[in-house]
Amino acid sequence: MLRSTPGALSSRLLEERPASLPGQLFVHGGRQLSRFCAVLFEPEGPRLLQVDTVACMQRLVDSGHPIWLRVMGLSDGDHIRAMLEPLQVPPVLLPPTLEVPQRPRVDCLGDALLVVLHRLGFARDPLHLLSAQVGFLLLPQRLITFEEAPSGEGFPQLTAWLEHQHVCGDDHDLDDILHYLVDEVLDALFPMLEHISNRLDDLEEAVLRDPRPGQLSRAFSHRSNLRTIRSQVWPLRHQIRVLLRQRQQLLGPEALSGFQDMGELVELLFDSTELLRHQCDAITQAYAASVGNRMNQVMKTLAILTSIFAPLTFIAGIYGMNFEHMPELRWRYGYALVLLVMLVVALLQAWLLARRGWFEDWTTPR
Image (cartoon, rainbow, N blue to C red; front, side, top):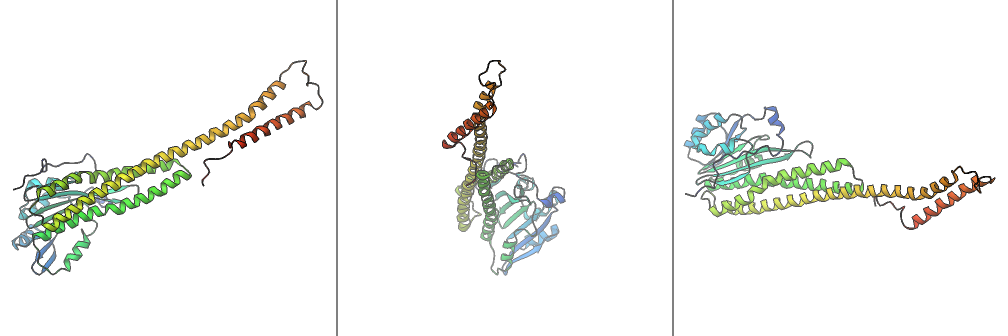
């Protein structure tokens, strides 16, 4: 009997959901209606069955074949517990799978393996994330998945593949299916990271060319999304290593090798998320530099105007004094001459400033 991970039996609820609720959960008031579907691994091959009552579940258990039960929707916890009684699922294992939102976890519990993840996706606006909890419970000859908000049939690709198989199933098929399901949830993060990366590249170029206040808010939104993805990946790094050290008897050699690859996958996801977070920081710094460059250009323009008009103001101030004995006061062409001198001074100053490169606009896109 393997000892359980410390605190593995406790329900570790998050203070808040990692992202927004999917649209279908809003329709059902935050919880989707519970449905049950089972894949029975018979000698002739896997068979997909709809399970509606406890009696149907009992008949599946009495067959003695391995079962993959899918619980889709967590609205009725009491009904789910009643449906799981024939499977002899320990009640202490149900709170981490039925109570949402839970922290991501991979816990080894003697004869059971518990995995809780969040399936993340984009809303209509790619700046907003959606999350739905997915729980996996592996027992001897039993695999149970708990989906908070399934879109259509849960895991349709795997289900379609199983329906076309004609081989006898055993316990090792269930651990391979568990590895496949967890891997599918994690693999879905890579297209999201690639999408965020493309948007960050476009945003960085726009910030360098023409900084706008809205760009900074979009960079902060992407950074918040990356922080959410990172929070879902971070706990798995250590927990998968602990699982591999414990040598869970329910996991065959192929499944153990798959979880080793999954550990590398989690490391890759974590590193990719960190790189994109650093890119968000770079965009923020580029925005500050671009705005500062524009402000310097404005201050330089004001300094040019001030330096040109300062001597002109000085000349106008001298000839604006109301002294009675001024040499040029009664000149016939004195007014035109002063204007000509002021024009020459202004042009001379502008030429000197142009030679020093003061009129070059450093904010012009190149």
